[in-house]
Length: 304
Image (cartoon, rainbow, N blue to C red; front, side, top):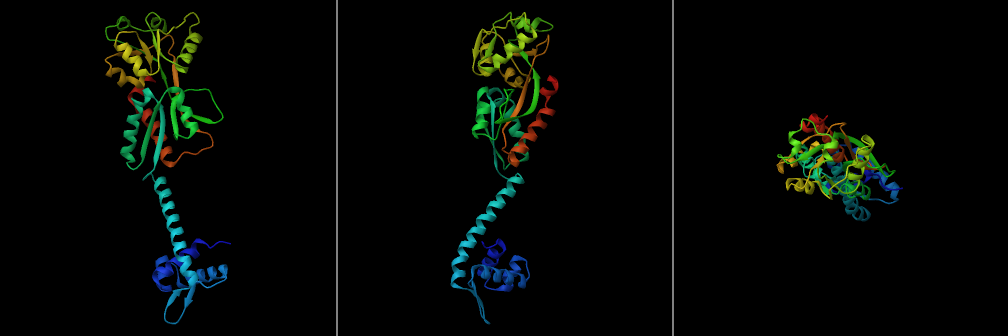
């Protein structure tokens, strides 16, 4: 049987104060309770840890050997428990988030900035990566959670709905689309279409085919990042589609964006976490703040 924490604290307090009275006051217990803890420790060990005389109280040879060991163990434990309490109270800690490039250069930095005004001691680390790598970063443990578009379900990754938005078309201000009262997917097909590589385009083409079986949307160019697509549109090399949260980046390139109709195709985004792995209090609070941010933000209200 191992010594209890109360027994260890009793010995350490007695060693530091040299008095049963002072040690009891330090631990906020009665002197008889403190004496009982020392006696139980001695019974457990089968040897005295305190030498009692009429003049003074001092540790035995064994007690002097145990004192620094107990003191270090209690110090490490108290420090660990204080750290846990601080994290639970969101006084410190860190959260690691993975997000696709466009989210990482538009919405997510605003979320981080707003969150840290409330929790200044929590560090938020952002990993920007291609769409296809978000869930992989979650699965590897590199990040606490990821934000990304809908992906095929797996047993290792859990998904939590975050938002759903319709696609918008992006074009230069002087483009022929600017003169049309409404823009459809059929209109998009009349101009060079710049899309993203990988699952983004695959899912988009599939959705378009399901909705318009007579329409075959053929990308003129496929690039890795949406910022590249926007730069291509800015250079007059075609048009592209994205989601409303990218509005600030679209404006930065001096481009226009409008809803696509007939009908409005949408894309759902999720929060991805590792199955059977609980989020830290800081990560949970960031997820909660993320939901609040999206629910109240202007581009979400205008897109819904």
